[in-house]
Structure formats: C-alpha cells, structure tokens
Length: 187
Image (tube, rainbow, N blue to C red; front, side, top):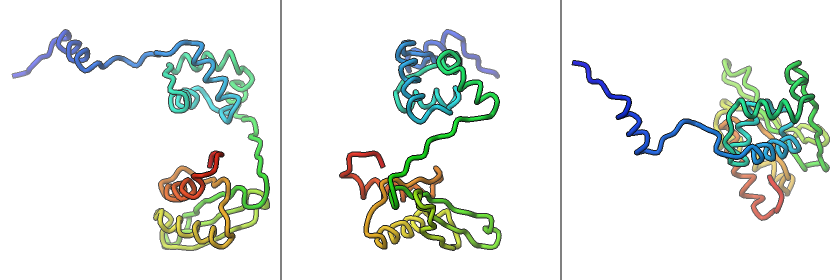
C-alpha cells in the first residue's frame, strides 16, 4: 500500500520549519558594493561562481548566480572578456624582504615508492628553506614540526605563510595564528 502526501501538507511542514527557497535577500546596492570591494581586493580574477561564494563568506550577502553574473558583466566587462578568453590578469606579488613570506608545498609523485617530499621557499629570495623526505605528507603534525624547527632555526616568525588548502597544512595555519596572535596584521 502506497502512502501519499498532499502538496498542502508539504508546504505546511516547510512553513513550520521556516524552510524557504534560496532567494536573494539583500538589496542590489549591497551586492554591488560587495562586488566592488572584492574586485578592488584579491577578487579581480574571480568569476561569477567564486564571486557569489566570496560575497556569502566575506560579506554575508546572499545573491543568485544570475544576479552576480549580470552585475559582473556591467561593472567589469574587461575582466569578464579576459576570463572568457582564458587570459587572467597577473596578480601583483609584494614581498617586503627575507623571511617575510614563505611558501609551503609537498610533492607526492614518489608516493607509490613510499616517499613524499616537503619543501618551503622564501618568497623574497626564492631560496629553498627546507626540503625533507618522509613516508607521508598527509600527516599535519609532521609538516608542523618541520615548520616549528625552521622558526627555531631563524629565531623569528614569518609574517605570511602560503600553502595550498589541503588538510595537511591545517596545523601550520593554527601554529601561525597562535604565534602571531598579538600582531595587528592578517597572518
């Protein structure tokens, strides 16, 4: 025996739990202002999907994909054309000196042989800071210990640490935030 639910019952349950369809709840002016802020910051190469996500995360603004796409086409037609052609604008890289910013990465091409390589480069001089071989690059504690050994070696803390968004870099991020929590700038 098949049990049927009426459309009215479904809408009643949706109302009770305050569930609604995703709709733009913010004004057009707020969304345009948020897009302008993102374009002036690091979001100049962001397409409409990424821009919508940035608006939601950074500014708490909800907007439809179509609304963001149309606003981007009006505000930044040159950027839209470059993204459609596959030619993005270069990001200006600023580094204030040695040990200001370091870049972490891991290489796992040798993983089938049980080897993973961890490395870091100074963003100013491009000097290799460390190159370590280990049996796994997915253990955040190992990457963190290598980073903390480097901090002890230079007797200082870099202002910025760049790395991919992998889970293995999560403890390095936490270390950096804990060590620089008194500083006013972003880590």
